[in-house]
Each structure stands twice: as structure tokens, then as C-alpha cells.
Image (cartoon, rainbow, N blue to C red; front, side, top):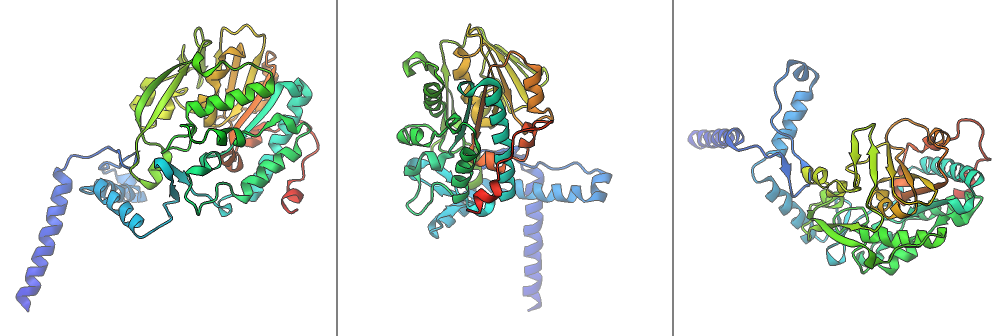
Length: 400
């Protein structure tokens, strides 16, 4: 019996030593294609980090991320969950035609935040209508992938939550001119059998943005160039996006397509306090350097980007937006001489101050994904500093 115990101890110590040796001699991997993220490499021992505990946390993350055959273990775990009949994996539905669609429910939304965002955005839009006229102000609150492509969902999945429906209805009810709010869901659903959203990412594709642009142009009195007016370029064919990163389910890689339009020549792009300067909307090298291929559009999200074009229209546009606007805005190059893009998630500048400092602005567009709009905690930057219109009572609306 003693010999068996000793043999067990020796075997355990041998395996432990072998595992430690593997960690020491195995090349460190900096990026996981399967998980689409950077991995923790071996941290340097620093006394301050050792004393505050961050070294231990980083070392534990290193052991997890550099585990031998990690990608294989992750893949096996996903397959086991699928074999066990799970309806979703890490909050992601496995849809038809290789589409991965995020699962949301009402418990994930903060009702107070939604009410605040409705109030702030409606005041901003109402003030903009008063200043520029209803024909110069528009708002797009676009559906997410499940809402735009319900045919890709599994049979048991809901495409839209009650909170999303309430938020869209509440915003429309709060507007003095409800017609400025453009409902894109029917238009996108008409094209849901086309490649209008990425399979592995939450964003829409450039084709999806084009269909939205056509609908926006129809509502606002602009003329959209036909699809055959654009030279289409596949910039990347190896894109695994954010939805894939949550579930690690192997599906075909996405393609990122650029639409080179008739009004693209002669533009200038400036942003990120002078760090971004270009004569193109598209930043291939920046997107290629990282793993997020969607960054080909304007390189990254930043507080403010200013675009100058050759369009002799006498009009300038302020766009208050999230990242969905990044592949939409290039379509506007023939409609405006200047476009100022503002993302409230970055920087501290009040949007009304931007309006006051740019007398050339003639039009306003707000473009948000419905879920990003509901969750954004930075829309207070749309608040007018002095006065404002009577607030919409979102509390009573949601309690109806």
C-alpha cells in the first residue's frame, strides 16, 4: 500500500513538473484566432504589482490563456454544449445559414437609463427641428441583427424584446415631429436574405448600410445613387467579429466590403485631435494590424471626426452616432460639403456646444442601434445647458 501511495505521489509530481516545463519552453501565443482576442502573456515580476495582487491575477490569466492546446479545449467545450442541446451558447443563438445572433432579454436593460435616454434625445431632436426645420433633421434607430433578419433565428427565439419595442415607441411619442424618426426594420427585413449583417459580428454590412441610406434619402429628399454606381471591393475575407468572440462557434468567415462611390474623390478626413488625417474613408492598414476588420471604416471610434467633400450643395451635416454609422456616412459624401461625426461615448464636449461653434451646420442626423441607444450612459452630452423643452414623461409611458 505504501508503495502504491509513493507511486501516486511520484506520478503526480512528474505530471506537475512536466506541465510547468511545457509552460516554460512552449512559445507564448499573443492572439487567439478562435476567440478573436489578445491573450495574456507571462507577466513580469514587479514588487508593487506583487504586493497589490495584480501580478497574481495576471499570472492566473496567463496560465489560463497559455494552456497547451487551449483552442482545442475551447472548441471541444462548445461542441459538448451543442450536443447537450443548449438553445444558445454564451448568449448566442446558432442561426440559419451560419448566422450567429446575440440573445437579449429585458432583464439586461436598465429602465431608468432608457427613460433618461429617451428624454435627452427627444429634447435634442425637438430643439434641432426648431432651429433647422423638420426637413433638415432625421433620426435612425436601427434594429439589431435579430430584428432585421428574423428569418435567420431559431424557431424558439424572439427577434425583439418588449423593452426595445417600448423604447422605439416612447421616443416616437416624445417627438414634436414623429416623422423625422425613420423605421428601418421593414426595409431591412425586405433584404434579409441578402448579406446585410455580418454572420459573426453585431454590425451591419456595407450593403445593409446602403439600403438604409436609400431609405433615408427617400425620406429626406436626397437622391441615392444606384447600386451599380459603386465599385465594390472586398477588403477582407477573414473577419471574425464580436458575436463569434462570445461563442467561439465555427462558421464561415465574414467578408468586409467597401463601396467606392462617385463622390469619394477629393475628400479629407480629420479626427482624434489631429491623430487621424486621411484622404479616404477607409483605413485598411489599421484594420489589418488588429483583429477587428470593421475598423477599416474611419480606423476606430473617436469623439469627433470632420469630413470635407467636393459636393457643392451648400449644406453641412452633424451626425450623432454609434459605430453603425461608420460604414453609413461614406454614402453621404455627395449630399454634404462638410460632415461632422460625434460619438458621445468618447470625449467630454457637449454636442450643443459643437452646434453653436459650427455656424455652417444646416442638417442633423442621429443614427444609433436600438440596443446601443438603450444602454448608452453618455447621452447627457446632448443636454442643452440652459433651458430646454418640456420633458417627455417616460415613466408614465412605460407604466401604461
